[in-house]
Image (cartoon, rainbow, N blue to C red; front, side):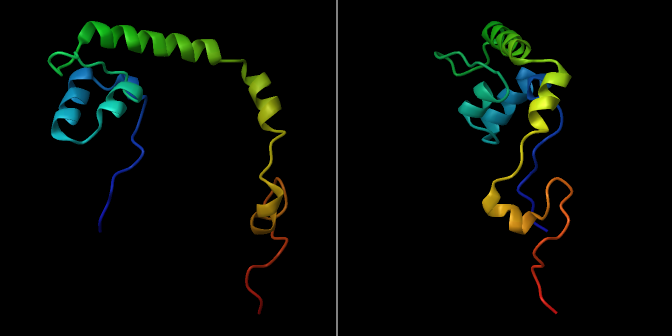
Length: 107
């Protein structure tokens, strides 16, 4: 079969900057992905890995993640109040258990 890849495994910031640079050179990823997904900075003059700038960007991304974080209980209280939009509930079923409300096929 044909596969176009998957979502990957693990934190993109854990991928070595050198491996990301190779992916970029091979055309596997874009410059945007290198910077915004993997936190890898390229030297504007050479187009090669800027290790110091990469370390700083990755450290900033981690600081930003920590700043956005909140206790699990707070997250769960908000998350548990969410539900899908009403216009798709007929396809989903009852909330939150997903029991069939409108059969999609009739006998």
